[in-house]
Image 1: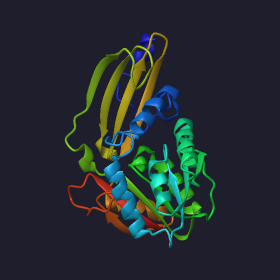
Image 2: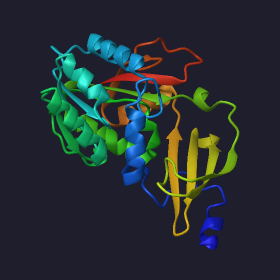
Image 3: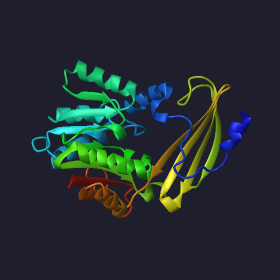
Length: 277
């Protein structure tokens, strides 16, 4: 075990995989769901005030009468999907967290809301010319490698009807500007990563040549050592235009966030409204 721990005490290669899947861990999914459902927090879903503003803005620029069928990818427990449904969209939500989808389905059933929720990896979705509008919200696009970003864009392009729109947000380099690399140990009797006692080595690594950072957590128990690598690429508008064009999209407009704020030189996020070409 010690040899395994020492093997992680160096900076990984760019986009190197961890040994454990953050998004599919059963215990982590409990804590993630709690974070999603905190109306005042921004840890997993943005705070409720922002979500309301975001949904209102999206409905104003892509109204449900013109864009009736909406797909929310990475929908989590349905926070956005439910609000889109209330705006009269015909909503499908996909996520590969079984716990989040189960919660979303339960909420929809209680409200008699006709929302289709599916447990699905969006990199493997096979929709064809089905949706007028697709959303990917809270900078999920940037956690993917360049290969997977292109793959996802081709999947989204296929899923959209002609002239359908894709709305998503990403972080800019301003978000991590000036943040140094770091390594921090901590002991937890229980917590986000494990139900029982564990040690965590949290590391933040910069890959400035690639405008990418890594948030890495090594979780150590008496029996196991797990490595979670969560990558985050930051974007410029030029790069977004290039990646979208390679998958058959044109950019309609850029904004400073997914609630329609203007894009400024110091904006920490970019929201893109793109059209299937």
